[in-house]
Image 1 (spheres, rainbow, N blue to C red):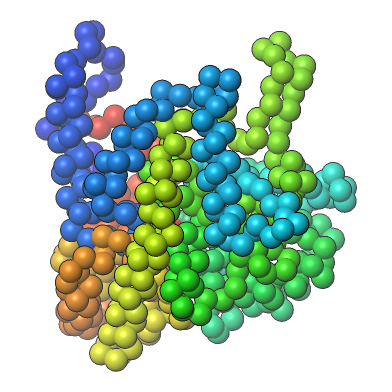
Image 2 (tube, rainbow, N blue to C red):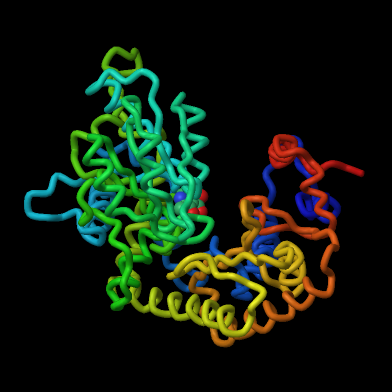
Length: 460
Ligand SMILES: Cc1ncc(COP(=O)(O)O)c(C=O)c1O
């Protein structure tokens, strides 16, 4: 209960709008109290993923930019034409980074609110393309078992059948099995660069060949890796080709609110051709409210978020991204080396670049997570098979952070060995990193938990 509603006994719970507005000082003080307490966790550098920059000066600059346009709706282009500059340039810079800008290129893109919206929009685009070009009415999409679950959510909402291709022994999608799942109603296939669970890049060149052979689209989910893999590669590390250089890739999602270090709430969805992008457009000329045209799911969108994402790319520059990628890659490799040479109980999944996932054939990894949690670490817990991952971000590259992690990981493995057979308190709940204390949250069934996230803090 306290995990979900920690403020229920210390702050007023509003169930009605206050009769008179509270003073700015009071409101700011209350919000600051929450933020200071909550940021303290992330600022230790002991959190996997989620907080990609961690640099409060950077956040402050972005917030200054945000403030200039926070009140702006980018739909009002006549009043705010800078939105077109920001949006067009974010897309152009992302396309350039992902090698979409060849001389005869027709590559283009849109900006969305995040990775999930980019993925779901891509599904919609391929559904529309297949319906209009090939008359497909019972669409399916084939994705690796490790592809992000937002695709399943999108398929559920859009009436698309989702087919999950199994992984090979290398933890990457089995291309032959994937091909066997493609049929006349397949509208697209998907690969990840890298996937959420293990951070690994699917064999995109082979998937590209599949897509070309079957005349279907290939979406690469670079939501997580899209803004870091190019800079790891630029630093001289061999990275499986996955961007628009690969024949057959027809769209890519890459989140600005992750490794582009922008504020939360933006992602890019990039297309190989303008024709493909046009399938996501919605126009309705017969509405009493006027001629309606909309590029995607959202109606009103914040000018502040678009301006601050643009600003983040300018503030970082290519060199800033390369420097950050260098530190992140080095930190990930330190963990990999330590596990491989000093912690025989753990097995690293695949060949990590920026995200290290591990399993344990003999120990309960959730017990390891319990102890890591007690020591202040917030990992992401995985399942099928049980595992943990540490998605390295800039806050984790601070002095001594990784060294301390390795020390605590060894101690946590020792704890799991000593407590073999005990019931772990943490589990594998996406976005929660495994929560301890018998886990009051997991006693809610999952949809009950979603209900609880939208309700007032209960009184005793
Ligand atoms: C590979 C991948 N795709 C998509 C998403 C979804 O992104 P968002 O949380 O911005 O909707 C994530 C989130 O971590 C991800 O790791």
